[in-house]
Amino acid sequence: MSEQPHVGLSLVNKAPMGMLITALIAVIANVLLELNIITLGYAVAGGVISAALLLAYWLGKGGLFFILGVSLPLVLVLFTPLASITALLNLVSGFFFGFCAALCIYKLVSAKF
Figure 1 (cartoon, rainbow, N blue to C red):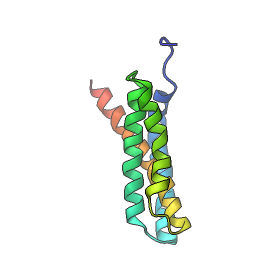
Figure 2 (figure 1 turned 180 degrees about the vertical axis):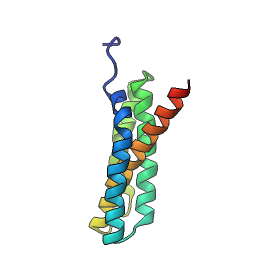
Figure 3 (figure 1 turned 90 degrees about the vertical axis):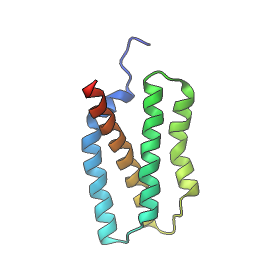
Figure 4 (figure 1 turned 180 degrees about the horizontal axis):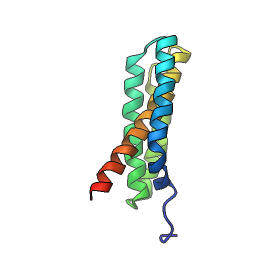
């Protein structure tokens, strides 16, 4: 199993398209519905942290990083104020935007080394 490429790292090449799609969803939700910047900020930060934890797992740092990385979205849903469906849409799109942004940053940094 250690000789096979990690499935998670294949997401790095798809991250720019993911950023575009999730940014479009967030813009539509915030322009047509209502802007909830606090929820969007929590979501983007949570996505970046989750991606960092999962990257650590995919790079062989240990299974604890996997558990923490996949548990973070649940923590975000539990502790983020979700007063409306727009806030939930901001949470989901912001999380995936942050996740994809972290993967893009990883791709750029790893390409230089």
